[in-house]
Image 1 (cartoon, rainbow, N blue to C red):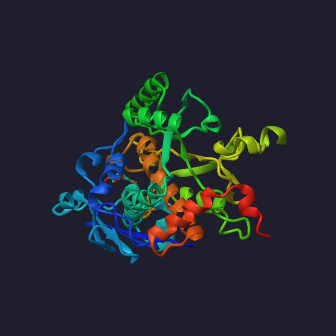
Image 2 (image 1 turned 60 degrees about the horizontal axis):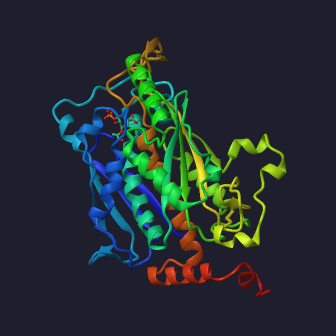
Image 3 (image 1 turned 90 degrees about the vertical axis):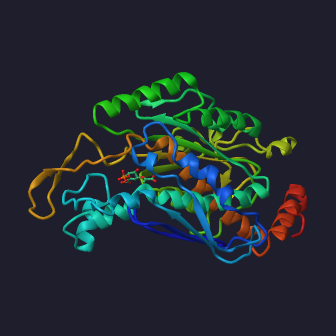
Length: 390
Ligand code: EPS
């Protein structure tokens, strides 16, 4: 597969490191271009006090010359501003793991009598670097005319009203929905649902609880054939599910109508082909989420991801002291009540990485101008022009 990336860094350490390999030469890239997405990740109703401390900015350490990528690995660095606050008073060493977090299994696995090294690395702080890396992938996709959008569709028990994702075939309509989401503190396009979501987060905060929820992701102008049916690890579904499930707190991913496929007959699941609708990708419906047989089919790609509530609750849960083995309540210091609104920018970043990866697999990854030429030529061919060679 064409690109891969790795991060290093702890939540309260000096900073986060990222290395992204495989981006072609010739993509315009600057620190300013990474900022808007990093800022989006820091916003959202239900965020904790830490987001008032951090002002995420990624420094470009390698892989860019004269404002253009060189084809070499791109090195990024985000400083943790909170690091300075812990220099005199180190945070306490917690010995009681939080249910729902990596604390307990990590302490047992790595032989630790306290959870700090585990909670530092399992922290969602790492997602700041994912967004920086994902923004590079996103800029590459945008150079090919491919844009990514998202909307929050559920927070706790509140499900948003609005057009079902399978009907959102038109990018202009999606743009409007996305813009309304950008104005909303919970990234929900429907005003009545938004008010209910805000109230649900307030109630959770007042009762010392936390809330999860669901986000829908969309990508338009996707060429036919990204991914492949030939091998399990190269199928696009495999790569999307793995990438989104790797985000902390994501517990389920659906592609297209997802779990609903088991409830509808085949005639109401599969998207019939209509050659007259070539301009709309050849289909009138998009229940498959733009992916069939591990490949994109030319329709918009859409997915749904589900976040669990954050594991750090003011209303602490029953646990065990790692040093005494006695029953104890989990610790609480500060936390987000709901990360779903800002989690959408992390989902978008991982979606961008997978789509950029598959795009470069198919159209080459040496230099961007060649990649885009091949993409344009592919798009210009009709189905018969593509298939008529053999
Ligand atoms: C996190 C706990 C909180 C979050 C953090 C993830 O940090 P702290 O313990 O410093 O209050 O704010 O997320 C971020 C720092 C971030 O940048 O998103 C956790 O335990 O996962």
